[in-house]
Length: 146
Image (cartoon, rainbow, N blue to C red; front, side):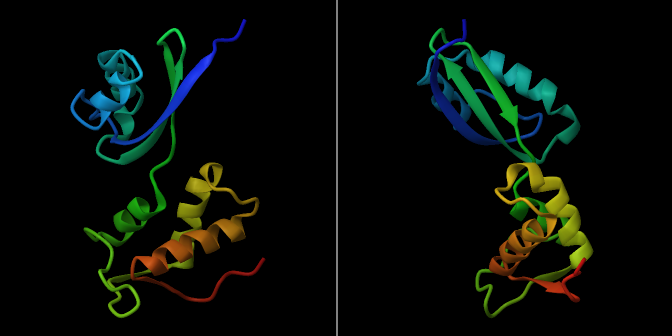
């Protein structure tokens, strides 16, 4: 017999650095989840991605047990990592802070593809390019046509 789902919790936590302080503690405590058990399991599972911001979806069941799914880092975080910037532009339409190639956009799109709501790599690349544009990052070169 399947467990009854009591709710979902969505958080963004640095890999290998989960601790019971806010925002994790209050979010899990309000649902009655064992906070330290989640932190131990999350840190063990994300040891290889230490320091990267990772979205996590926690499924809480009615008996206070839980499962969680760790997703790939968000596209803006990956773009900042590629361009070695601290943050996006305050005025993305006027001040450009960096540029990326279509090949770098393709790498990010392939990495993020399971989490995006698109079917082809080309549409995923356009989504990543749109995120880059809204951050003040230009995409250089011609869009590769297959």
